[in-house]
Image 1: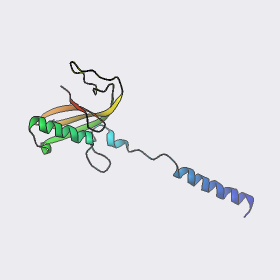
Image 2: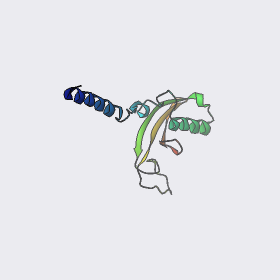
Image 3: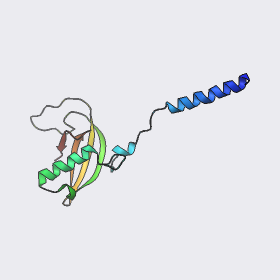
Length: 123
């Protein structure tokens, strides 16, 4: 094998290795407005938590509540952007979701953290 052929072979192998080491693609559709599901069609934990909270608060079946949208948001504080009287909020950016639900002809909005562990009904 001559020097040129060896150089070309090494170049092709190097290019293949670099392509394999690239950053994984991200599925941005999982956190966009109007898409409350993960890539496989499973509900986002935050949207599911909001549905469960509304069902318990209103005495409804979870099946009677529709998820209108779940939009990824960075809340300006640990109170998820909803100030409550007599509540102190840490000034820290908190990733989460704005979840809009439909129940009994009414739209209801929740602010959640990214996992649905903390959620606030927006009045």
